[in-house]
Amino acid sequence: MLPSVKARWCTRVLKIKPFELFLQYIFLDEVTYIRHWDKGIKYLADAGILENVIMILTGSDLAIIKEARMRLPGRRGNANTVDFHLYPLSFLETVQLKKQFSQEKLNQLLNTEIVPSADSINKLFEAFGAYLIHGGFLTAINDFARYEKILPSTLVTYSDWIRGDVLKRGKQEHYLREILAAIIKRYGSQVTWNALSRDLSIDHPQTVSDYVALLATMDAVFVQSALIEDKLTAAPKKARKLMFSDPFIFHAVTAWLSSETDPYRRQITPLLSDPDRSARIVEACVATHYQRYFPTFYIKAKGEVDIAYVDQRRFWPLEIKWSGQIRAKDLKQVATYRNSRILSKLPQFGNIYGVPVEPLPLALLRLRAGLDNFDL
Image (cartoon, rainbow, N blue to C red; front, side, top):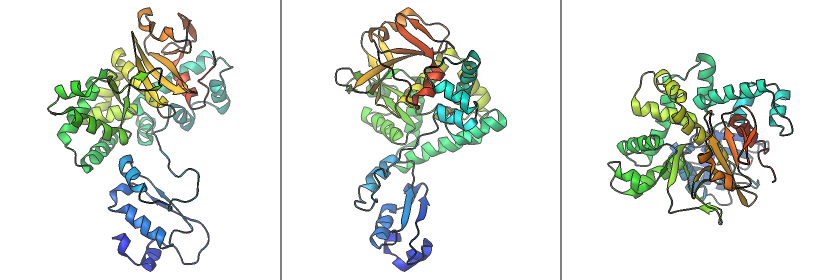
């Protein structure tokens, strides 16, 4: 094992020549698949072999990385930030990558002082429709650009990642299948661990909670809790909403569970053509975007508010309406807050019962640019 080898051998393996003073970089991808990787790095650091080296470690199992990095005190350099949490590309980043707008047009879309043209809004809705298919994963984005669909092999690659990381932690595949199927069945709905366990062969609610927690540490699942409004924290005794962290993860998991040979044509396309089911995908997409940057919850009072994110020591309610019609009875709760907004499928701005309405893809595009908050 690496901790027991000689320093001179390590120098030769890592191709670090003695007495070289220029900075060198070592990238170790999926480091958690290497047994005792943290002990090896500790040995190299203590031996002085990494003095002029920046070592970048990546892995999909956040829990293991968090546990191991605690065993490396004083060996992580002097930089202010040494830990980075990488997500799939956001909607904005995907639009930028695909160069769907000129820089001038994109700047106009991001500028809240400018009302975008109808043509730009329509084009943005088309871009968001594609994002609901490929999400922020480069392989899926490339598939869609080349073939106008997602290849089955691409979906298998990512479902295998989820299965592999879960099985690596000693979990059972048949339990995983049941839990993932239950998440899809109740997608975007409030659910308790007890209610989930009653529908499964799993006897204990804690087992369900443990599996979901593991999926959350892998960034495969987001657990959206209810908000305690006066404390700006999660309500531990209220039901939660379970959703996948990216639309593409939803499609990959669905394809694995069904073993469908043509998942794009038989699953993804029909799903996004169904108003009710696509609305749940959209709500999850918006919620998981906000949770990248803010503590994100939902509100359950006399009525329900889809998203409430916390910023500037207050919460900001958002109602997602991915349909051509907005009903008054669905707005009773969100209309009680002066700083609430409705993100809708309508391509124009408006106001309903005193609540501002704006095109959902535009609001999502502006999120990362920090342009979505306004004072009232």
